[in-house]
Image (cartoon, rainbow, N blue to C red; front, side, top):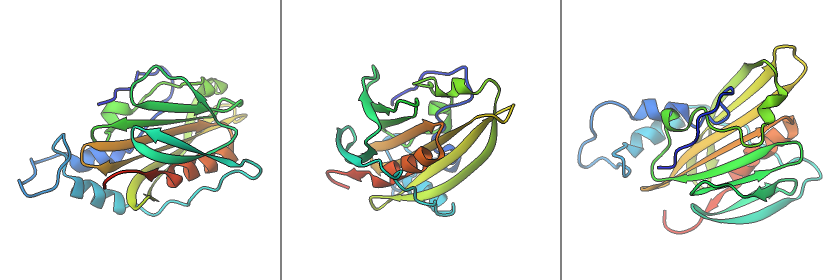
Length: 210
């Protein structure tokens, strides 16, 4: 499984916190569908569907999307043109950044990620440093349809104690198929880019078998 580095900042990557708790407990029966880690995938899907539906984001006006092909997980992603690819020395990961330090990180994993494995991830561009004393003001968890699959999405806003600045976060995770999961995390100081990052996750189209 892909592991993220710990951060000294307010957690910048919080992916599908509820999935782990939904999967805990007794070992599933032999005829229950599970992933490679023994996670009951039916239970995960049911837990995510219990959330309310997300408001789908819209690509920011004037930002024409670019279609990008990923090989792990095999997929097509539609990104705002203001985001450009940056090399990341991490396996199974891809990241795009913008001049205002916004970024979108996509990671392939063997199993649906849990909060213990990916929470508190690295702030790749340092965008959280805009906030001298960051405080979480809002947090919304919802479900999002992604290429016929149900993803768990977490949206958060971090406000500086002075109230002078805000940083928005969007995190999502889903099971692509047994043995392959998808996690995405976007951080931005722009509300319109926040909506675009939600649209990025919703736009993903997976290739290959279900």
